[in-house]
Length: 144
Image 1: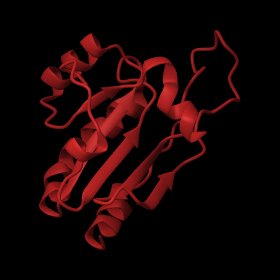
Image 2 (image 1 turned 45 degrees about the vertical axis):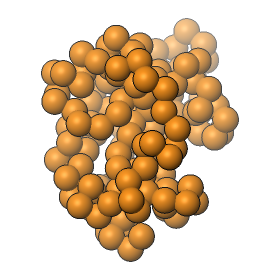
Image 3 (image 1 turned 90 degrees about the horizontal axis):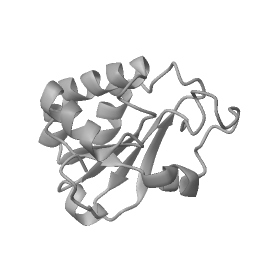
Image 4 (image 1 turned 90 degrees about the vertical axis):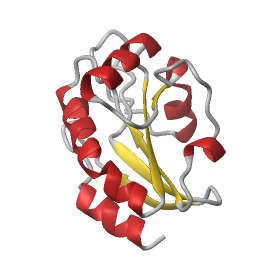
């Protein structure tokens, strides 16, 4: 994470689960930055439902720390070394060739995982410019 700590699902989750958010980069990607700001607006609502939030990008840890301090982020910003997690979940958009600025980008998405580690809801968009609606995420979180 932004503090150099390694996390497991058990230490990330809240009493009722985890909202796990996949983003390309907070460094130069405006859509990811906008989504991060939106998440900060609803994180207290999710936490009131017992749902913790964590995001994952392949931004360097040092940059994630800057983002956390700049935006006053209260949840973990995780570093996905070599896009390992995005690749293991099969959500890497393979439309872009190595060298393209969008190479390695995950499909924008979120997983709402219950406290037992079961994925209960998937929120995804095909276009990198779009992001799942947080109103739908809050509604689903309330049902856990």
